[in-house]
Amino acid sequence: MTKIIMVHGYNHDPDDPRHTADRLGGTYPIWRDMLQGNDLEPLHWYSGRTGISGRLTAIRNGFWRNTYAYAYEVLAKKAGEKLEQLAMIDASRNPQRSSVICHSLGSRVALYAMAKHPNCFDRILFLNAAETVDVATPIIEKNDKTKILNVCVESDDVLAMMGSWFEPLPGRHDCMGQAGLKSSASNFEQVFLDDPTEQEKYWLENEWALSGNNPESIGDHHFSYLFRGNWPLYRDFFAS
Image 1 (cartoon, rainbow, N blue to C red):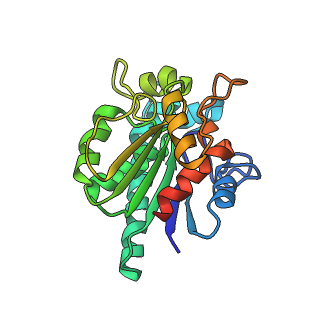
Image 2 (tube, rainbow, N blue to C red):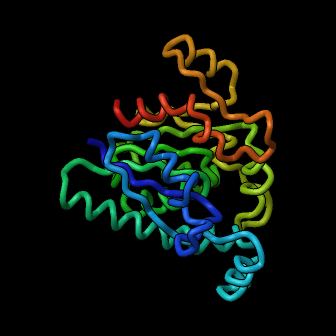
């Protein structure tokens, strides 16, 4: 049985039943349903909130220009330290390293742990990762014994218009879940869910109907895991 730690993204509050990742229809119940048969452990972390209350919290903790910048620079690092501790506790109990599934800003949490303790995970699945290409690339290179699947969506407008602009550094910085990463390492694999060529390839090879673009929504940042047709790819990654 594979141990998988689940890491949600931005705009969650574990102390608010309406905004926890464990709420009915939330991220973690969906992942649990799709990854049955694995040992799943949730990482709960306050990842910033939209709206007035979230903005006030960000102001009280450093006058951040927006709540996402606060979550990116401060909250994700705290969660990354917590994730690393979980990985180390698991390693002390079981020689098999834990794996991770993360979405959006959860990628920064996972990469922070990977930077502090390279190869602390067996494998990691990035879904629409919001970490910037510049930050992620050197960390990925150092984790040469971790099997990595970077699931990208080029048409992800949330990453293209918000994630790449709203993190603390001035200017625009590509997100790894929208622009992708350049790596030829044997432990690294990358899939663009909305690329017709890749969709055809996976259909012909496995009859997997991949899709990253919801035609009924512009802000379909969560479609990579809401669309059930993508999950055979994810389950195969953790099982291989």
